Length: 131
Image (cartoon, rainbow, N blue to C red; front, side, top):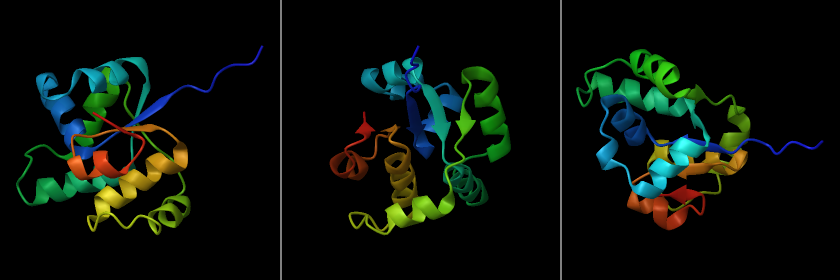
């Protein structure tokens, strides 16, 4: 018997924060359905961006706390996609100057998973983006 590869969905940083904070109402119905139906991943870049947001005071919870909580609550995992593959794909993305957006989008492209985001620039340019 041939098994289908499980579908994976990458979460953008703000989606990760909203899920941690219980702000489900901020997430679209389409994105919520995808979250409920798929395996959930974040890029290690999300954890780095969470640290940046913590350091500048935009969030008050450390990244490890957010990730551990979401692992326990919804089975969130951190992707292990090789950085070199992500960088090679990111080199061809020219529609953003935001390094986090570029790397997160590239990783979704490498893996072939959907990318849940409310970021209009990503939605407009990344075919894998859903909202």
